[in-house]
Image 1 (cartoon, rainbow, N blue to C red):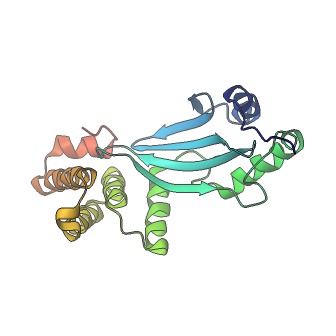
Image 2: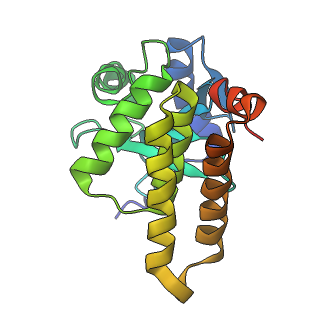
Image 3: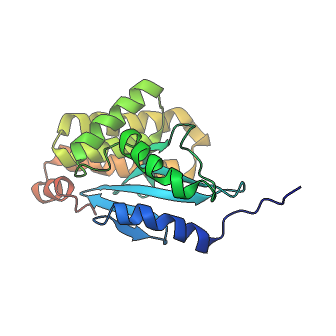
Length: 205
């Protein structure tokens, strides 16, 4: 029986190169992650080496501002394109690239747009009934950035309700997130123009 070995980092970098060439306008992090940023939003296309010896692409966005990482819109590809073995790579990667273009959202070919990320993230929360302080904090930031003051306040209040519901069992990171949303809510309620401008042009902090 053949022994299956995971891809080495060097091998993964080699397979990654064709995807890197397909997205010359994106930056690269950690040798195998494509990344781009607009305002408070950073979008990632990452490539993971699996125990099976295959690699697997994934896409997600992160929202800057809250003290803890807020990851949203995480996606793998459909089952036909999800994992690529080394022997399949030469013929399969063009199909994987097309699947990425069709299945990863926000669109990895159009310019990154904060309003689109906000729409997709709010749809995801509603569709999947996500009840999560991280998501509430991230949606508060996104709404603040595009100038949706009332909705930003609603998400701040939602995070505070979620923390209250956790009571004494709330983790430290949850308390940090809710403290952040309280401070953001105070920025809006106090009408501090400079602070509001910081939020709306992505210069949080």
